[in-house]
Amino acid sequence: MLQICHLYPDLLNLYGDRGNVIAFTRRCRWRGLEVTVRPVNLGEKVDFKEMDFLFLGGGSDREQNLMAEDLMERAGSLQAAVEDGLVVLAICGGYQLLGRYYRTLEGRTIPGLGLLDFYTEAGRKRLIGNVAVEVELAGEKVRIVGFENHSGQTVLGSTAPLGRVLAGNGNNGRDGGEGARYKNTFCSYLHGPLLPKNPRLTDHLIRLAMQRRGLPGGLAPLDDALEQAAGDVMLHRLLR
Image (cartoon, rainbow, N blue to C red; front, top):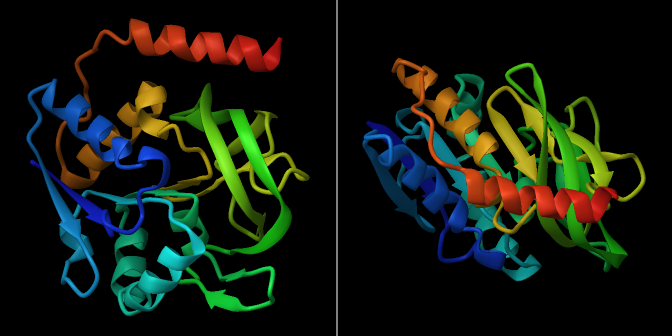
């Protein structure tokens, strides 16, 4: 059985980001793989080392302020789990909180967890629109799609990007990178939500979670014709 931790589902759920948890769960259950989803809200205890997949969604500056202090108290245990191979997907505001800090337009600095080496500063122009990104999954280059809507502009330090922007803005609209990746931690600005639109990425995360749990990594194929067709239409629209 895989254990899924959904952090702050009541605060971080912009643009239907909880759909990422639904997609991960459904694609497991369709294959007969048991999963349990544990929502964790402010002040509730959780042992990250017991989890196999952790999801942290997006929220406004207000929501980030509300849970930044709570998350800071969990930083040590979360970092230990990340180093141990916990599979993490962090989207938009959740992504920003894993870095060193987020600086608002007013100059106020919201400290991040410092788990990954990057920082984010608010820009005056929102970066909005459909995005295509080339990522590497298990040694193979795969094109994924999603929708971005963020004013924060992220600059990576030693942390690698999740992928290369083919269309859209990505982290900051300048350096061609989108998201961040460290061990089994995947960060992105892509909503949509991301996983239902990109079943190959979802299955990659499932395999990583299974490997960490010590389960056989083979996944029975599913009929992804509809998802593939939708992705192909968007890629054609963005890259033609």
